[in-house]
Image (cartoon, rainbow, N blue to C red; front, side):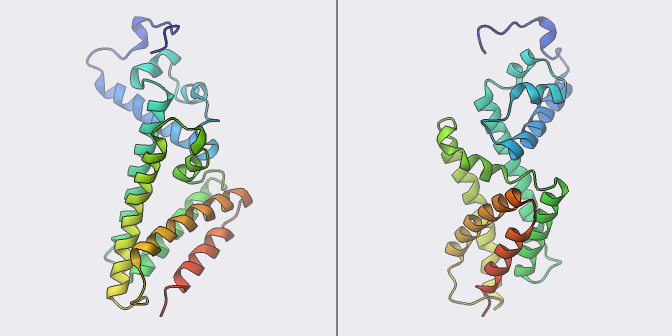
Length: 212
């Protein structure tokens, strides 16, 4: 905790009020995700996040040791949210076609960007663009997240391969890596142009290149 930070007894959650403390911590993370998917890590001001949640500045250091620690919590939260979104679509047994499951994920993500007028992109993609300015260890953390998402796409592509939906010669691991390379670029371009065409172009080309 910064030595010049003035802390009073009222700054911290009262003993036995763990539920409220957890809710406050979650609210800070949600607000942090919102700002960082819009402005990135460097330009996201902690004071703006605290004001939005209605938390005194001193209380921030009760929940997080630093902005670096806060950023890690935000990445973990976003990863959990996005992994759930991927699993929801890619493991949806009610959709028989694995490729249709990938399309369903794409449609969901596209609607999410449109909901916020294309002002919010992918948190991981936003942070990657700032990599040289981020705290030590963030690059490895971001790569680990992408690798975990990559495995999910790879498994879905393997199902498509086994069902004969895509070319049997396709290297699913390599193609899943290509998916995220293209996806992050398409999301960034859609955010720049404030429209879905880059995402539409990417998913169309990605799927067409796999078809027999």
